[in-house]
Image 1 (cartoon, rainbow over the protein chains, first blue to last red):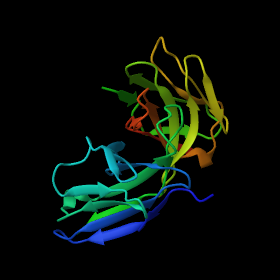
Image 2: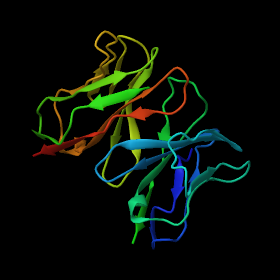
Image 3: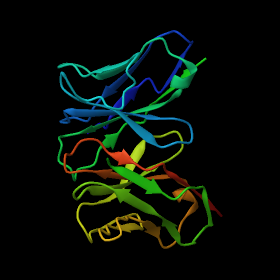
Length: 115
Length: 112
């Protein structure tokens, strides 16, 4: 049973370009979460999605960032017009539902570097 | 809102030493509590969990007990190994069952 798959593992973008980060949840999981980890810091929640729905985007910057989880295919975190401050590791996690005692399962992350 | 506070690192220990990493939380209701571990260049792996007061989670020699009266979930290990060197994150998930709220992480360095 494959785990949470994220790609690419490393992504380099120049300032002003767009970054697209992909996440395929574990088989049978319909809930996806995106977190950002700045260097030497903890994980900050960004957005929580179910298929075709954004449930909670309270941690997402209001501009330039968007996320989707279509009916078919992976979840996508999109960052437009990237700036140096967007350089971070972006982690995706999935769960089968909102059962509060079940853990989230994390991918290995995408490390975005903005030059 | 929910919050998790961990002791700041880095924590540097010699092999076979006793480990404690403190974690306290603030949450409404009765959350579930988790410890995750992150090895260099990797994602987070679940280490252990506890879902109600006085539960003890354990895995790979690590233990943590859910203490409702002190709102704590301290991580302990009796004898650390070099391979335990990693960053450890305490986290909670509340009754709404949505996202995990993480502490800031504690880096553990174990020297031979």
